[in-house]
Length: 106
Image (cartoon, rainbow, N blue to C red; front, side):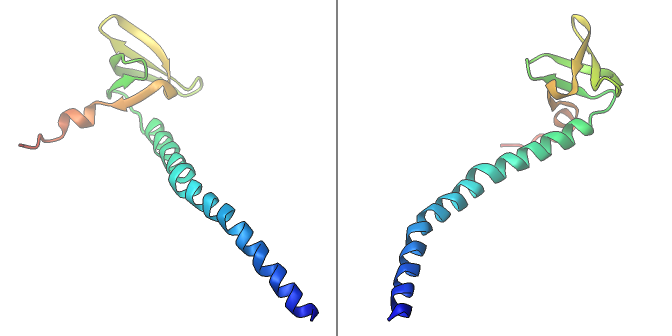
């Protein structure tokens, strides 16, 4: 008799927790995992920045990297207005690779 009561309680709690477990799995695969992948790609991009690369900052300024200061984690960028100093994290994309890529005919 006690065994049958325990089994009934066990299955109802499992069924009650199943929606929460399912929601966590969905949130992990659609929100958390892609964000972690984006952060990993951003970190590797910032580490691969080199002198001479043509880049765009997050504020939309186009320029060319003149020097990288490792101790400050900053870069010196040459723009049309002159030389500017930016944090590495403010660089959003590199144009050097995009400009060298072959154009696809439509």
